[in-house]
Length: 445
Image (cartoon, rainbow, N blue to C red; front, side, top):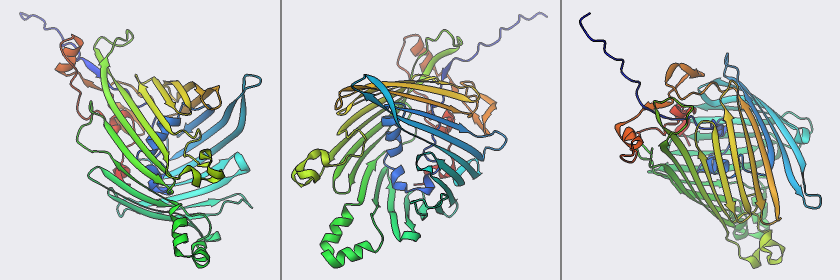
C-alpha cells in the first residue's frame, strides 16, 4: 500500500503484585467484642506468633455461595499435638471443633450480622446478633446460649465507635455480672485505651468495700484493669517504607508487655521461567514482630511462696521474649519463623488459588523447656475466587475488581538491567488492591 507495516508495540513490562496469602477475617465480628482486643496490633501479632507456626493440628473450611455472599459457613477443627518422650511419638490430645453459620445484611459491610455457633467441646451452642449503625456510629449486640442447662449466661453489650474514639460495655443480666468496659481513642498516630474485666457480680465491689475498705477495693479493681498506648504513624504511601506499630501495655498491674510490629512490601527481580517475558519483578511482603513480657510483681510477692513461675504470662508457652518473621515470596508461598525463650519454630505454607482455594502448612520446632521437638499441621479451604496477577475488570470476587499488577516504571527497567535500585510504586499497600475487604467502617475503632 506504499507504506511499511508498523510493528505492534511490545507489551508493557510489569511488576507482579500478588494478593495477600490470607484474607483478613479477624475483623468480621469485632463489633460484637471489646475494641480494646483489636487495637495495638493485637490481631496482627497473634497471626504472626501463632498461625501456621504452633505445634497443633488445625483445619478450617470457609464457604460462601457466590449466589448470595451474605451467607457463609465456617468449620474449624483443632487437635493438640504433644510429644511422648518415653515412646518418642506424637500423640493427639484435646480434640475440639466448631461450626458457625452466619448471615450478614450487607456483604460489603460485615458489621451487622446474625450467626449460630455449635462447638464440640462441652456440646456448646450459642446464637449471636450484632447491629451497628454506620451513620450514627453506635451499635448493640448479644450472645445467647442455646444449650439447656449450660453454665454460660446471656451477654448483652452496647458500643460507640468512630475513627477517633470508641467506648462500650458488656453485661450479663441473669447473674448481674459486668463482663467488660472499655474506652479507647486515636489521634496523630497515637492510640490509647483502657479495659476493665471484673470477676464476680457487680455487687461484689460494694460488699468488698464494706468489709475491707476503699483502699483494698481499689487494689482489687486495679488487678482487673489493662491499659495500653501505641504509636503507628499514618503517612501517605507506605510502599517501600513499610508501616510499624510500637505498643506498651500494662496487664492487671502484674505484667508489662512491649510489642513491635513492622510490615513492609518490597520488590525483587523475578527469575521464574514459568512467568511471561514481560514480567521483570515481583512484590514480596515482610512482617517482623517482637514481643517482650516482664513481670511487675516482685518474686517474693508472687503466688506460690515467691516462685516466679507462678506468675501467669499471656502466652501458652510462658515466653518472656518472642521474635517472629513472615515472608510471602509470591501468591503461593509463605515462610514463617519464630524464636523465643520458650523454643524455636519454623513453618512453610503453600496455597493454590483454585475454586475453592486450598492451603496447607507444616511447622516444626524445638521446645527449650520440655526439651523435645514440636510438629504442627494446618489445612484449609475457602471459595474466595480465582485470584490472578493480571488486570481484569471482568475478574472479580463478590463484585470487587482485582487489580494485581502495575506497569513497570523506568526505574524498574533500570534495575532489571542492573543500572539502579528500585523506586517503589506508590500506594501499593492499598489492601483493596491485594484482595482484602475494605469498607467505610474499616477505620472505626
